[in-house]
Length: 309
Image 1 (cartoon, one colour):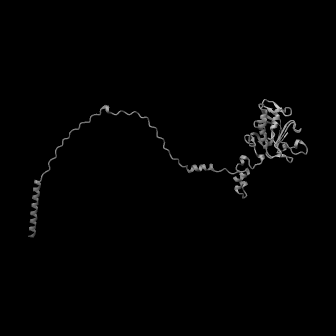
Image 2 (tube, helix red, strand yellow):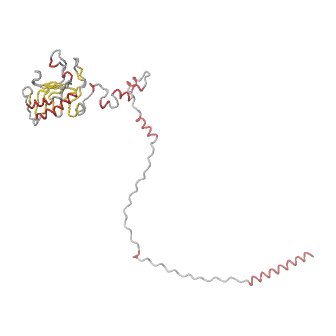
Image 3 (tube, one colour):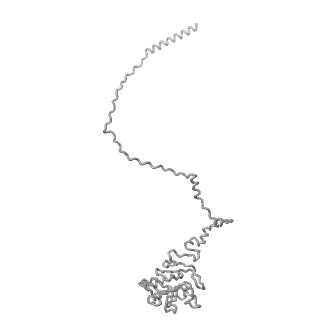
């Protein structure tokens, strides 16, 4: 009984709801139809006028080929280094050198140290100036001047030790030309005598002969170990000490030769007198009978001044 009432109520409610829905659908507004769109045809674009076309570009020169990219130097391969190693190896030492350092000798002793080598050669500049060497090993300057004077030409000689006591020259030079005037025979003397000879040529010979230019001196004697005037028992001559030179004549530029023995004229006398004071001793014709054919000059020192006759 109860179920039947409930079911009737449910059925009644359903029917009422369905009628309302049907009424709503019938009375609800419907959507309007869409308007019909008319598509207008598009006119084709006009062709481009010929005058507005871009002109063709001129043919451009071909672009230069790009420079090859710099490649970074690669380090040498191990094979290349191995091939170069034999070239860097030192040459084998001579057998004689190895024998010299055997027997426990120190390797450094086979090669003298630089300091010892400099000491042997006479110091740091020994190779240039000959310091520490014997005079016998000294060579003449490259350009031929001696005594530190470029006007005196010749060569340095080894020390001369006389066979007789009192003879000899400690530092001899062999002079061949003095301030442009040649010597017929090279004079072996010391440097003070060579310098005095140069001073006499400039202060005595040239002023005395004037325009009669002297180009050569006739040398009669220079170094010789003997006594004065060759007298037995006399003192050693200054010739035996390398301090004397004898002049026996003058050769002029025109070829003439004036001899002291036969042509002892005014010019020679004037040159003879001019030597007094430049040399310590001057002797000539009329002095002592031993110098009639030559002029004797030496650089001996006298306590009371030069000896001139």
